[in-house]
Length: 270
Image (tube, rainbow, N blue to C red):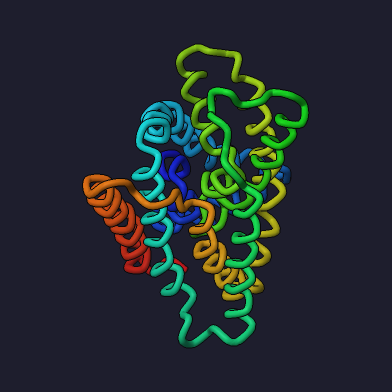
């Protein structure tokens, strides 16, 4: 779950669905601040430790590819995001459950992320990330939004960070921290606090929406997934070699997500 959360595409929620623990995962988070907190911590602690180890060990690899092979890396992300959509169509039972309202939600999700991509602009180099109060507040808010999205089956928190232009900065900060550069701690603390608050606050809301407005929620997710293409798209590759590499990488990313989704569908997990 930690590895997939680093990659904009497959979310922790998707992996929890695949592993058959999604309801337990969401329920444990919502019970952290209840009288059942001991049981919740006992379930979540191994997951959190495993995710932390994966994030710390894999961040340097992603940082390298983002810095040195930006276009192919983003095409890989695009493939992973689009590869999730067939799974979402299957679990949404589109042909039976979707009406005009569902399709309107999909269009609204696409439009929302299209507008967000217009304001995203060109992200500054990760190594020159600002640490002023305004910058840290932005990282904090991004952490809240990312944590809220990572709980949904289909959208990863890292995708939200990518849309908001914070993803390269966070990956860079994690990589520097593992290299014992503690100057990046304010970035990690800001994002980390946002993630904690976002997870605790969003778990109950998402549980309620998925329980009472299941297919409307799925329609919104599908719209956001399609719309995320506007934010992830890095431009066209250069040269024949660039095109070949990007297409192959795109197909690999799509195949990984598609196969995850196919396995989830076989498991029969809602």
